Image (cartoon, rainbow, N blue to C red; front, top):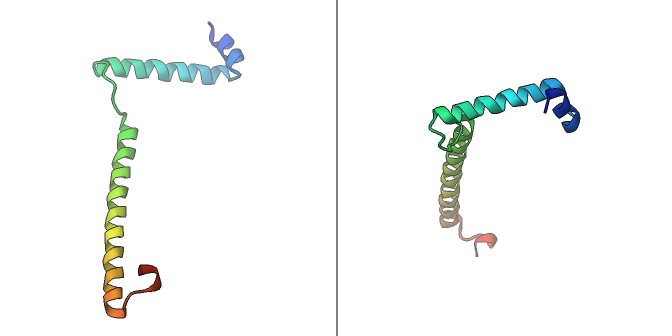
Length: 83
């Protein structure tokens, strides 16, 4: 199939089809260089790392909030929501 035909069928520009084809072929070559093993690309790895950092920060904030709440209950007595 020609680029022009693919563009008509996909309702995209020939330039877009050419770009996607080039990206696809480069990705395939990169996969072969890496031994063809599926893996996480660098952008996905960075996002996964960020998710883990955010989970840890959320956990720490949750613990701090519980400590502050218990400290306040100890000083002021139980609140309605803590009963």
